[in-house]
Length: 201
Ligand SMILES: C[S@@+](CC[C@H](N)C(=O)[O-])C[C@H]1O[C@@H](n2cnc3c(N)ncnc32)[C@H](O)[C@@H]1O
Figure 1: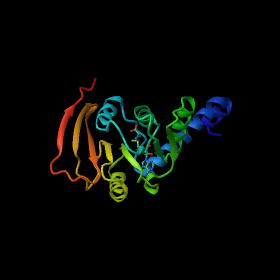
Figure 2: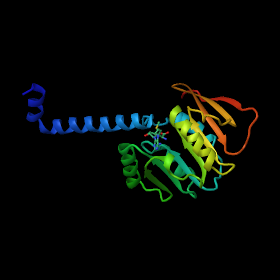
Figure 3: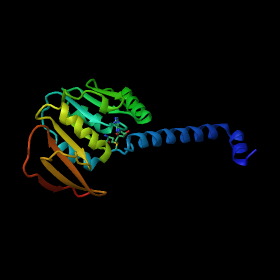
Figure 4: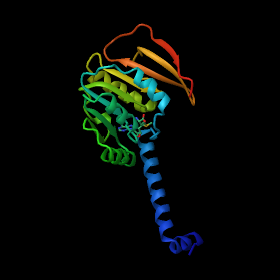
């Protein structure tokens, strides 16, 4: 019998923890490969810049598409207490974590759905946030063009929506420089503005 296996049998608690960590890590990695996006959370500096781009009032549902561990969706629920806020996440462990944090500190206007946002209707959106990657943004751009009402604001961390003209772009000084994009559905913008903000503090 291999020595590592004998060690595991001798220390069952450590063995269970190790196997749980390996299975959890494998599950997260598997879904990151499937969606093309790992569950990296948006940090506070970029989140502030994203929230600066959101309208003061929103008419409709606020979505965080690919809500990961739930941090942005929880902050959206606090920012818009009068709107339904929905975080959609495909990866089971981050989704489970966000459900747990919501169970511990409920927000009546917030729900987390598990599934692929590309297959869910988004036409009731009043505002959308996302932090995805280029492949997912390409598929999302087509869907949002088809479904969003004119005037719906889309704020994206780091990745542009292909084929959409941003209304404004902020370059946020965080760990390096991060671009944040603000789009308004149905509004054709001839030239976009670029703001520089944040000091990485
Ligand atoms: C980089 S994380 C961002 C998490 C959170 N929005 C934030 O900013 O902190 C992106 C998440 O999107 C999820 N994701 C990617 N494509 C998805 C899809 N089609 N449907 C649901 N979730 C998706 C990934 O599983 C990942 O957890």
